[in-house]
Length: 557
Image (cartoon, rainbow, N blue to C red; front, side, top):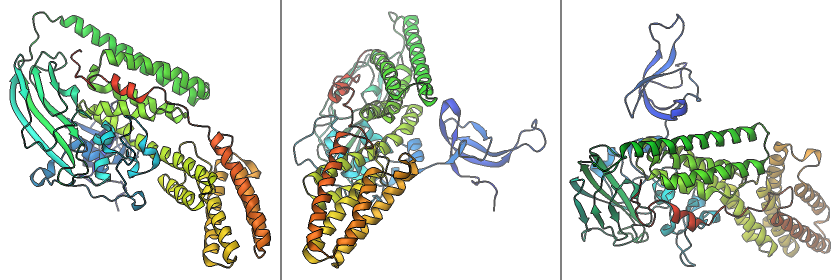
C-alpha cells in the first residue's frame, strides 16, 4: 500500500494560506525540484483548476491538503446550487438531479399553514424541512444558491431551468427584454435576483422583465459577460413547474471610459475604501485573538466587534461592489464569531454571505461557501436548542408523549447538542418525559407492563448518555449535573416502590412537581442551563431592505 493518502488523479482542496482553499488535481507523487537537498521531496504536485497553476503540497497532512467533497466540486463547476453541472448539460432533467439521501427523521413538511411568514423569520428553528425555512417564498440567497444549504434539493422540489441569450449589446444601447409565454412563472423573480451582475442603467422587475440603457461600468473590462440569474418560488408546490431558475445571458462591449469620468478619483475612492476595510479586518482579527487569549470577556469582545462590523457594513453600503463582493463575505464571516459568543447573529451571517454569492465571482463564492458550511451546521444547532425549549414547554403543559418526540427529533439534529446546550440536557429532558409516560402506564396497568418497562429502560439509557456528556465537560465535578443527579435518585426510589400503586401515585406527583421546577429553570435561563437567547441585533426586514439593490437595482458605484 502507498504511504501517501491520495493517488494521482485525485481531486483535492489545497490550503494556500491567505488565498484560502483551492481546488486542484494531483498530477504527481513524491515531487521534488532540482535545487532541493538530497532526501527532500513533497508528497504531491497539484494542478489548480481555476488558473492551471502548478503547486506542491509540503506535507501529506489535512492542514495542507484534503480530498475534495461533492460540495467542493459543485462550487467549482457551476454558478449556484440550482444550476446544472457541465457534465449534465446534454441530459438536463426537469427534476433536480441530486438524490434526496437525507435522514428520514427530517421528513420535509414545507408549506405555510398560518400565512406567509415575515422576511427573515427563523422558520428553521422548528426543525422542519431539513432546517430550511418552511415556506419557500421566504427562502434567502443562501437557502437557494448555497451548495451547503440546497433547500430545493433537500425538500425534493422540482427545478425548471429557463435560459435566454440576448447576444452582444454595446454600452449606450437600450435593453428591453420582456419574457415570452414560455416563462413558466409570471412573478416572484425579485425574491433573490443577482442584481449586482447587471450593468449600471439596467433594471430588473418581478415579472422577469429586463430593461434600461447600458451605462459605463468602471468595475469591468472593455468587454464583459453578464450571467444574470433570478429565481421564482411562486409555483414551488406545482409539480409541473416547481422552482423556476431564470438565467439571462449577454455580452457587453464598448465599455470605454467616458471623457467626463474622473478615473483617478474613482481609483482613489476604491483604494481608500479598501484600506478602511483592511484596517477593520485587522481590528476584528486582533479583537478575536484577544478573546482567544482570554484578554477580553465575551461581552467586551462582542461589543467591540459589533461596533467594527457596523462600520464595515456602512462602508460597503457606500461601496457595494468593492473587490467584487469579497468584503460582504468577510462581513458575514465575522458575524459568525459573535454568534459563537451567543449573539443572535446567524441571520446576519447568512444574509451577507448569501449576498456575496450573487456577485458570480468564483473566488468570492468559494470564500462565502466555506463559511456557509458552518452556518448551515449552526442552523441545526439552533434548531436543536429551540426544539428542546419547545419540548420543555410541552412538558410544562403535561404533554409528555409529544415532548418525548420533540426531544428525540431535537437530539437527532446534532447528536444531542444544541446552540449553547452542551451538557446532555436534551437527552436528560427526553428521559424525564419517558419516565413519566412509563410510570403513568405502570399505575394503570402495573409495573410489569411491557410498554411501561420499555419506556423506563429507554429513559435510563438516555439519562446515561446525558450524564456521560455532562461528565465529559468536567463542569459539574463529582456531584454531576444537578437535574440528572436528582432524576437518578428518583429512578432508584421508583424501583423500591414500583409494586405499590399508592406509592407510585405519590411518587409521580412529586416527580412531576420537580419536573415543572426544572423546566422553569430552563425557560428562565438559570444555570446550569443556557441563558435566554438574546434579541436580534437589528430588525431582519430593515437589514434586507438595506442591501444594495434589493428593492431597486443600485446605479451607484
